[in-house]
Length: 463
Image (cartoon, rainbow, N blue to C red; front, side, top):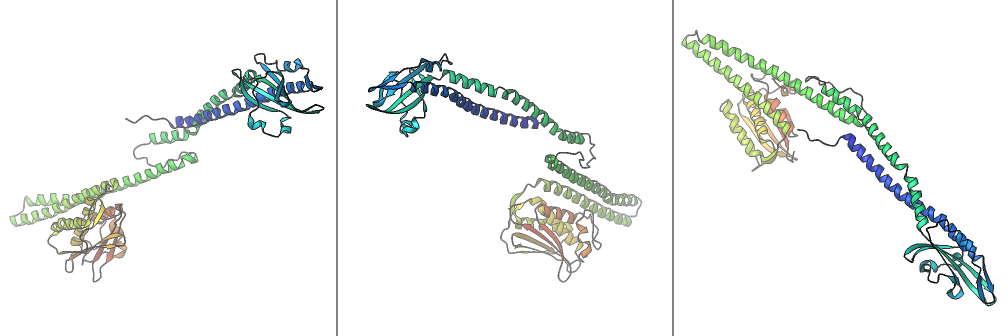
């Protein structure tokens, strides 16, 4: 049962939803800062106006600072009925002239600045009587006979009204964001659905095809999906080629098997009416055809095994030298007692690959050398040596060889050289499949003095 997973549309919309939520949180924080700043500026103007109204009533009488406190100045702050207002007037020598004597002073890091700059106005927050209060501090310098220095007007107001205003401004700013976010996610859901429709068309196209319909997908798709469709088309081309090869293989195998089977039937029918001597010859012909059919079946099985294992690529470590000795021992009894000479300077040859496939390939090369290269002295020379980062295995015979123009063709299935002895035509096709699955190379070369050299080159590194 296929595991249920989140759809591509769900993933995309989920990501977009996270982006929207993150943006909403960012806007919320930004709107909060903006709303608080706007509320502070509005109420700070009232604080400064109140402080200026009080400062304008200051006067000097003799050596005393007189204040005719205008209550209208404090009424300016009555727009916030839930807030409390505090004030204090500080004369020279830091003496409270009137107001709340225990109001908090300006923080030291701000008070240490230029006094003329402080005269403009300064604002600070401080806790007073259990609440946070916003203070405005305004300074005036006086120089009268008997009185000189700075007079400070400090006016404070609790933050209830301004915090409520900031909250209201923030809500009004964010009010349209919620519906817009929901609408945007809905549009993304709809848009992603439309964008993914080509995938649905491709899936429908593939679902309606028959087993043999392997033509490329022609449905138009967006550029982002083109690599996927190209990969599907490439896979279908390989599958079509493999099926074509399989059909040709089955047809050729049936044709190859039909001939020895027909000969077997004919010889068997003749043997039923033959004299003893003729019967012996018929039985010998039956044995030859049965041997040929057995070899053909063996090679068909070996070819199918090699194709399957080359796709699996289950490589393991083994000794190539020992494997070559084993291949020689298994191959020589098949065709007789021909002389096989093996030379190498290795004590061991560690290799990583598929031992079964390589053993089958080497057996096929040796078998071909014995069957098709038996002319001359009949000896088969095998040598194993290193070349750069590869092992090289050469199997040399003294037969007629293969013409240069036919060497590529003999690697095809069921293809045989013009001078070759009768056979199935699968041996070299199997060998090349094995060597190429190990990222190696195979070459057919002329042997000095006559004959053929089959050269297998296998990389020593991990495949």
